[in-house]
Image 1: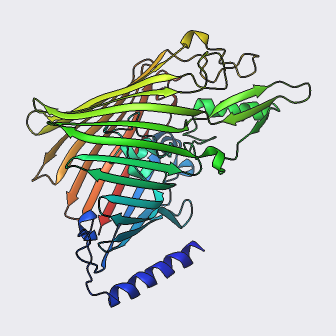
Image 2: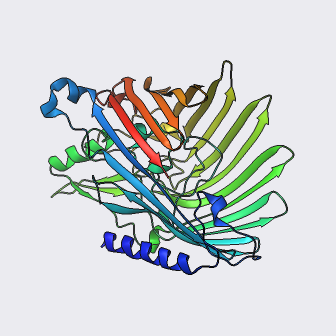
Image 3: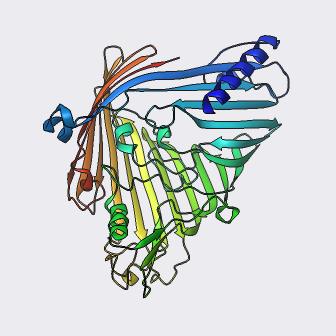
Length: 443
């Protein structure tokens, strides 16, 4: 069915574009040709990427070729857009033999009404100003099984975001101010592996419970009861960009409620509702491109003793990027979450009568993300290293990369290495050391 939809869309695009008064291919937003109602000619843009990569885990390689898998190697994308001065339609297709041959990455239509834009469809939106998953970026869940393998050789991590069906409106007033609203009719949490290499220890706990006879249920989040909505305002004051937002939604990480009955113990996965109040700030100060975010995530557990609900928390991020010396660039960001009513937490033992989803965790969760890079040979060759450190867990991930770019061709050799406390969020993946080779052509 997906192949038929793809072929039908390509046929329609070609037929319409050939009959248009103004035909053109382009890349990016500049190709859309929005002229504020002065020109109604059609502009069509087709682009994409074809890539091949091999990803091998070092412990598999050391065990011999009979235990080594390098994946399906091929991946790709096709991006279609058609626009006039009144509207824009976009369909981005993703090709991945390991899942479905063809899937929709994004698909939406946007209409222009003067200073008001209205968008509906499957979209990836970024709220906030942080470079690396700040606390205000609350619209799209993540595919957590791909974060580190993508981070190894990519600056942008939009590929690990999961597009959501939504209605989005944006109104611009003045020269630098904008207010936007979003409505999402259902919910999807982070895509988390239950088993395998990238299954976090917390999810494996549920698998072990099921093996002991505990019934684990998963909620139906496709109904309107799981709808989410938010408002965001941004403006510029002097040389500073500031923003503020309100969001009502659900936490992407699942919680759990355990019920011990005379017959069979039961565990229900839950996605806690919460209200978020947040603000952000960005400015160039003394050569540093500074970015900051602050958020209050208010769940229903204001007593702090409900083990099936995450406690309210204060989250913040602070980061900057700057060219240092000899062409070396540093990008640094600190993220932290501070749990309220921490002293009311219960036990982290799943089979205890006082299980708490946050039991055993530290009062704060602090993560440092740094990226150092330097370019050589007329900027065609780049040497980069990304480091992620968990402060409380005393664990880390190091991802070095050597990237060669020549016009539209990109070759990358990268790796990922984990260490520290094996009970930490990063240290638990110490057996997942990997090497990756990729070749991509963008058109």
